[in-house]
Image (cartoon, rainbow, N blue to C red; front, top):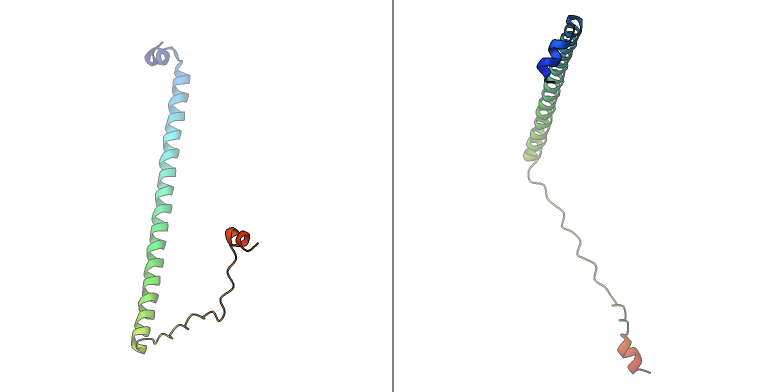
Length: 99
């Protein structure tokens, strides 16, 4: 049977109940969509505010650093030189040759 035929065979009460259920489902979807959009907008606003605050802090820190003048970086210590190189291990051939 096609959907048209099954619709005709229903009683008016069944058709009304089905229509009401579909309507409630659509209303619920619309409400959830509005709530989701409100949450999205709130999160976006919070992100913008946080970004603006962090940017202002960064610019203030950079301005303070600029006013102090160039920072003198300490020279890194020279890498430590090995006083005595460890003795090399003998290879298997050298070990057999010495025997």
